[in-house]
Image (cartoon, rainbow, N blue to C red; front, side, top):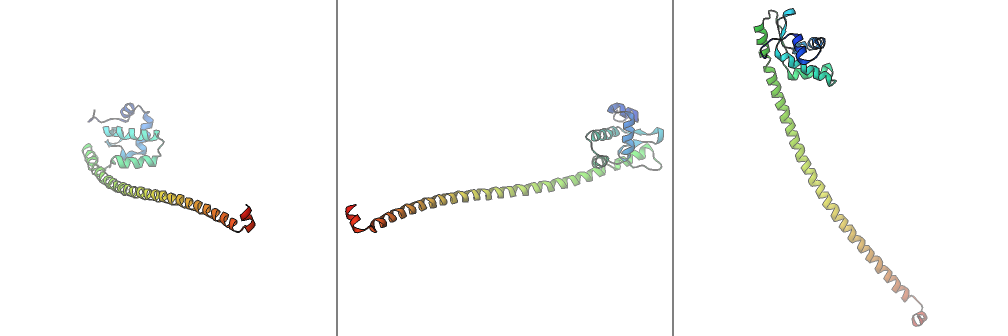
Length: 181
């Protein structure tokens, strides 16, 4: 069946979609549907079923026609029509379209490489941020220890001040209170 040309009715049956729906998809996204011949003699390559399946699934996901067309342009080659078209010239035109996906693959690899570089940069930055956080946590720990020591020192100073005040109070008492307590 891989080399057999199909009619719209056969594709609709294969995809289990109403024929009218398949015709709508074909008319709306015609440049992406590979075919041979014209008019009532128009037949579709087996790849057309995959394109139409992709379109149907995209509509089920509530994608817009523009989104579907963008996705199709990335995933499938476009069909080019010639005035004196025969099965051989159509097949040759579609084979020439195979170079477009390789350009797209190159573009995807370029984007993938850029994304990987960005991820590596972000990973390095995350490592640096983690180190800074650890340093800040260490500094905070030291500051808490210093604060605790300062609190202890302040408490000691207050106790000493109280003792000094008590001693001064005893010294400032009149002489007769010192003797007779």
